[in-house]
Length: 112
Length: 107
Image 1: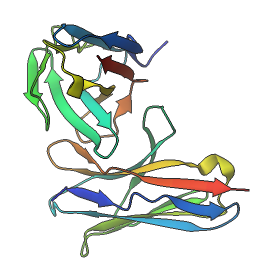
Image 2 (image 1 turned 60 degrees about the vertical axis):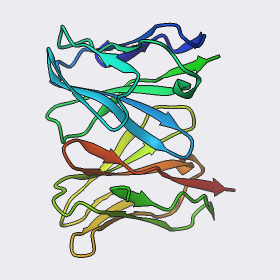
Image 3 (image 1 turned 90 degrees about the vertical axis):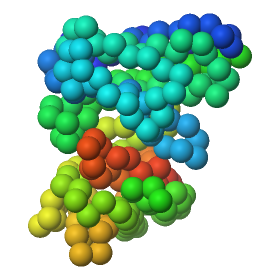
């Protein structure tokens, strides 16, 4: 089915572990985004990508790494998870950058 | 200062009521504006785009006031299913989301 999917949907990990959140879209949108959503902060942009092999920092990039080797995939890696990274993570895509963004269902990450 | 600001609410209204949300934005160069709806524990979804001339979609009306740098959303004849958080969105280099306004519609 066309759309944008995220995996895993739920993840519990421990402080210091590496975690990768996956995002896959089938629309061939050029732009993809990673957000985190926390109570009191709303949606905050972590990283975004304009095309394969082009990524840029958003508002809160520290502690995160992204890559985009294929247009349809945009994984987000927490290199050494911290409790402050407990959050709901949403991936989104759009075409072009200032158009409507389509969101994935989210990943609920808990760092113990 | 946050680029997009909105009242967090909650707005508690009875079914059938009319309710309006306002949102202010700080970047006068913003070109595009949107209202998104987010249900509890779900992803945000586009409710409607906001055009300079204003636009209407059924019970929903969105307005843009560039002079005062705010956008509004009017919901008429509220339904229980309208209960959600409404996110105001402006644009800078990418979309900038407000923190959302919670609406609770009661029977």
